[in-house]
Amino acid sequence: MSPPPLGRRAFLKHALASAAAMAGGAGCLARAAPSADGAATGAADRPNVILAMTDDQGWGDTGYNGHPVLKTPTLDAMARAGLRFDRFYSGAPVCSPTRGSAMTGRHPYRYGITFANVGHMRPEEITLAEALKTQGYTTGHFGKWHLGTLTRTEKDSNRGGPRGVTHYAPPWKNGFDVCFSTEAKVPTWNPMCQPGTDKPYGTAYWTGPETKATENLSGDDSRIIMDRALPFIRDAVARKTPFLTVIWFHTPHEPVLAGEKYLKMYEGAGSEKERHFWGCLTAMDEQMGRLRDELRRLGVAEHTMLWFCADNGPEHRTGPGSAGSLRGRKRDLFEGGIRVPGLLEWPARLPRPRTTAVPCSTSDYVPTVLAALGFEMDGQPEPTDGVNLLPLIDGRMKERPRPIAFESRGQIALVDNRWKLLTRDKGKTWMLFDLAADPAEKNDLAAEHPTVVADMRQTLDAWRASCQASRAGEDYA
Image 1 (cartoon, rainbow, N blue to C red):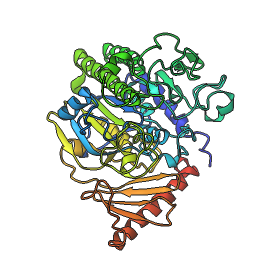
Image 2: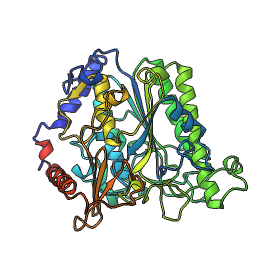
Image 3: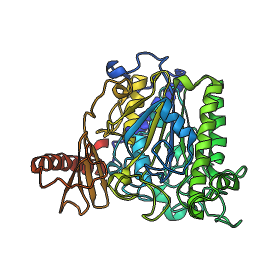
């Protein structure tokens, strides 16, 4: 189903032009939201927003979650200073769908990004970047995009070029002013080269239409990304402009490599593969430290929402990544595939450290940020799957108001405050776990609680029907 001739994207473009003309005023797609649930109440309440995400970092791949070897001092400091989520969920057990959920607040099955390298960001979807531009924000994307191809003209990465022209949907077509973006994975050291050689890897960092970066592309990939993100932030601060900065690290997705400095930190520990894995994560953690230090140096840390998470659980069942005590890994809807490290620093709103066991998700970013600004997007496709976390941030939310639903290649799951319902065979058999008592999902209680199973299945059936209607275009009519 196609959108009407003057669809949401046309209205959005008009809104962005209007916003620029009004020097930061709300465009025609924005309307004031009530101040309930701690929403902002005035134009001055425009926090900066940073969404940092790693790629394939498991629940157990942090010092603060108890890893016996890995050093992540910056993440540990964030966990001690801000809001630590003990039940933070990626939108999916693989990368592309999770990124879509972070940009839209909607489950990726609604717009066809059902797996890695499948689908692309539909033009009818309104991303967080597009929404914030109506409020006078400058927007930048740095790192892995994975929501569509970035070039129509030459072979690039997994799908880029003429072979994937129907999936052309780069960040600069989705609300981002400044970009330093790859379509998909790159090595975590010398990202433009095949591991251990000087041969091209086959993926470029794109900065705009048919324009590639050519300098400062050697060494640690997380540092290369941060070298672009920090000048963007400095420029926004100098112009007194609120900013959205999306920093999506490739670390620790394969090919996993670390430089000598980081390998030496783990000398004598583990296998060579483990040392590279731990080393590249410590290198990423060091760049998060650079980011935090720069926010403080610029005097904007107080009013910046700094979010951190991973896009899914660790790769490979025998690989070095750790899901801690959780069952499953990447591609699973068991907890090890979707429960990931989650952190938020926002000193103006979180003056004291806290830990929460309320389940939260990457789909919650969009409704939470928009609520913090005190506005809603009239053109935002509905329904939204995420919830506004401001009441949780303020210490007033004790339970999640509605469950989190998942679907991925025959696996379907529903997570609420206590229970998790899961099928791995398209609904032929179901498992039920009491996550409050059994986070490792060792005890299937489906036979003991048939009413809970029936109620949760009914919720899932309604949600799946809603996603099917969304994919058919009904949200855009």
